[in-house]
Length: 382
Image (cartoon, rainbow, N blue to C red):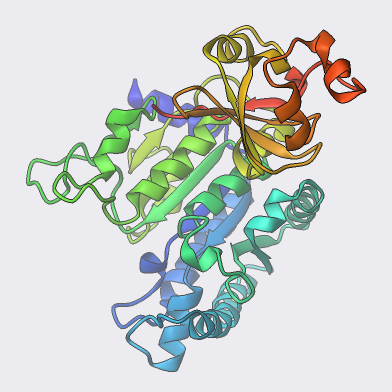
């Protein structure tokens, strides 16, 4: 049954986002492994010849820069880290372009920051550009814009894993393939001789998340925590994720042929429209509204709009039209939405019935704080 599910997932994936990490792309001395890039380019070309479209999210700029400079230690100060990334990014894209040109294709560099995906207009511009590149048969090479951003180098995206998830939702790809330096998600500590790779994860719950946490230190092991977060974002949007070992020969071709490699994370629930994917998973909240239990139930289970009577507290400063997170009394964020009122006005009308808004504010442009059409659920894991 597992093999049949996997075959169905990969066969239906007409668009594929492939994320490859730094370690599978570099040698032990830190230099870029151009043979590996050439092999990956050949596989991407073969996949595209099947009629699929591919977007490649590639790490490796900092590692490539260190290799070019002959440095063995990653710089600690931000200016040098950004400088190394700038040197490495140029070399990285050139390597991809040389490899793809052997197959008659072009590499197209796309550098993004969190702000590019947070802003709705810029988000749509990025999507249109990626779509046009795929129409041309080019291969978009997406990476964080390390040279101008501070947050990304401090892992806002989570070492490109979250960025890959956002891009998957952006282009509405049915499948994200994360090529790492591990074989997949193990059922216990990988150092345990009895540890086995989980072939399928039907749902990412707390028991699954705990597999990325060291029991002794309580810290995440390697980058698996960020990969699970990326998988949660994608599967909550109605798509699938496969984590496999990027160092295995022909891994991308084999994964997309349905071979039982890595761990398959299955989509959760129905397909979510692109606008609500942006709202629920990509755009960052400018503030939060704390709801009582009844309001959460009405919004989450009954599909109602958020009325002021259900709001018990306001966190942060935001204006009309901003994205705000919705939290329950325990502080769990379960949804995000576009607010009809600024924070100062929500503070004045919280707990009131809609009929009392005009009395409190002197006007009532909206009966609801957030309309149900402007709410997206984040599927938080509790």
